[in-house]
Image (cartoon, rainbow, N blue to C red; front, side):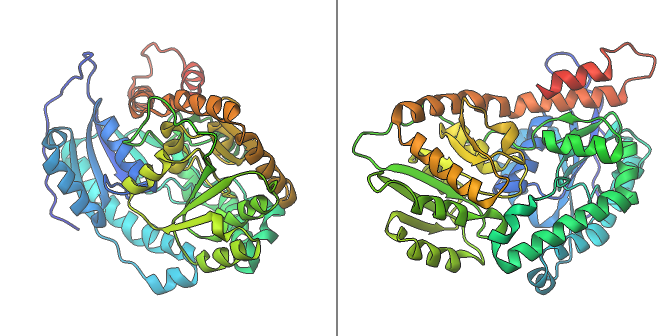
Length: 445
């Protein structure tokens, strides 16, 4: 644990004259240099600091990246104080069983983070505490134990993976998701920590998706507000790329090469496309399934149209998106997915399963959602979606819609919504308000 340095700041106000609250944030994953949940944590922290003063407890492994950004942008130091907590890892255990990473996060890092949180709270006296990342419901952290209002979310992880899709993932993939579904069911029924955290956060519970909101209501009997965990990337586009008649339809797929990302569904769909449809596929990322998936592309006779780039820096990934015509997502479980919002902001229509956070994010204006109640249905839906996207008039209209849709994920808009939740949680009981239900409706739009 690093040396504790606390700066007590005088009460300040934002540009609109509103009081800036003192907010304690727990964001284990928080980095300006990484994507995925680390980029999500940084996006939230940076945006919320425009409205409130933040003390952020984060992982020590993010320290160098954060400090480098603070040197580049010293104005952030007046709004955010970072406090770093180290974590012990056991790579051999995580390799044998990936969920093992939660053990040291829950039982070592979160306890150390809470010890730091208590020291900070004793000196600063926070107006509100916010558990931010990780977003999984089974690891709510311990900030809810502090004697201050508690906000939790965006929360994910409560939805089950569709059972009918599991056989297509191979033996290891199927076993993993069977175990995950069973573990989810167990934790939802018996985790006392989650129930106590939901009770403390009542009125300040943020669900990442509609499906998560329904599960929170069904399992815990609590209302929640839907705010996607993902925000806009640093690279956006004002007008989409237009495809020339002689160009192949440039599809892009991005993700870790793990069973749950389910690239074989797309490789199977591509095999069944009409012979005269001109397409190419760029595949980003790598992982344990890479060799197996490359072999499947060869077996399907499509290897010559697939470009495997492996892991690339985020800037390169965004550049590759700028050169593509559509993003395809095949994941069988996820929240909203960083790559999805990056695609919308780049003007790419999104072809994806109609489940998880994709169901909320993608509308008929910006992409194509495919029913995913069975493997056969998903593969045929992906095939039909690609055929539709091959029509440039259709694809370009969806691309324009994607850019419009991306405005819903502006970080400032999301930070304002969360700021209103802070205000609700800290407002005196007798103070007049628009009513919690009214705010829930307004923020969910």
